[in-house]
Every structure is written in structure tokens, then in C-alpha cells.
Image 1 (cartoon, rainbow, N blue to C red):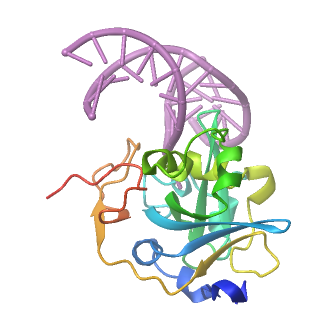
Image 2: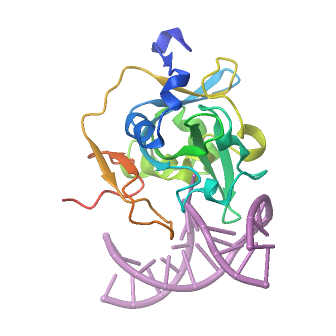
Length: 213
DNA sequence: GAGGAGATCGTCT
DNA sequence: GACGATCTCCTCT
């Protein structure tokens, strides 16, 4: 239990030692916890994408093990943070067995606590967050959520997300997603047809609503 | 509300 | 030397 008052529990290492598709289906609804001194920032995962390892052309692991991506070839449940477009960071969690290179990209969070801190980090401190439309601007995208939680490669890459000592953790508060949708992944050019994006149906904090079917 | 361009730099070829 | 698992701003409708 991380913080008794919230009744949070860690996920097990075996939760992440599975196929990224299974982890991807089970992660929505779980919480990302960022500890900042006495403050605690919490967001609920509402959208993820699975990257399957070396055989998945869209995955960073497809290039083989490099200095940049070595975390996803390491033990499961660790943070893989990379820098993209010269502007943004993205947060992934390593999956499968050590040596496999699978991971899940965290694409969107629903803000739970620490909204003022997130807004400051996003330089949106002047907005009225009683308006849902504004709240969406905090963490409804992979780059945004990293900025809101001040996640960087320098600070967080390789961190164990299941350790009580870590200031970046994933936890379960017992919340269960009612219905999960599956779509193709966003923003990739290789293997774009694979249905590996998982999002909470009807949640306004996803990066892009699923095309209804 | 939709669509397109630009920003900006680490990583790999 | 090219490009990318993105975001924001600007223009047009």
C-alpha cells in the first residue's frame, strides 16, 4: 500500500511480465502516482498503446537493443521515457520477460489530484479548471501528461514503477473500467493497421475519441 | 471544428 | 542527414 488514506495497492511484477496486449487491456483504470516532496499528483490511465517488441515494426524495439531503448529490454514494470520531435517526452512501461523488448505507451490520463501543480507545469495556471474542456488540456496526450507530471528522460528513465521508494509509480485503487475500446495506434507510419490502442469508452480525457462503430 | 505547418533535437543510417 | 509513438497555433470554413 502506497498511501493508506487512498487505499492504493501496487501491481505485481507478474502483471507486467505478460504480453503487452494483455497489459494494455488491463492498465486503463489504474493510477499513475507522482510524488513531489509533500505533494502527490495522481492521474487515472484512460488510454494506452501496446508495442510488441522486435517483431513490431512500429516499436522502438524493432531497431534492436540500443542505448536509447535498453530499458524495454530490461525487467518488466520499469519506465521507458524517450524524447520525440525535439519537444516532448513520452512515458512507456516495460513488459514481458527481460530481454523481450515489449512495452505499453501511456497516452492519456484523467487528472485526479494535484491539478494545480499539473496546470503550473503545463503553464496553464490561469485557466478555469471547473470547465472540463480546460481540464482536458492537462494530460490528454502522451506529451502533455509527461509535462503535467514533470516526467523527463533524465529524471525518470529506468525507474521501477512498482517500488515504494520510487517517486513515480503505478497503482490500483480498485477502480474498474466499464467498457474498453480497441482502435489502431496513432501517429505511426509502420504497421498502422494493428489494433493495439486501448481506451476507456466515453471518457473525455482520451487523446482522440474512437471512431464509433 | 478541421486541417496544415512549424518547432527542435536525440538517435540511427 | 533524415526523421519521428506530438502539440500548438494559425487559417479557413
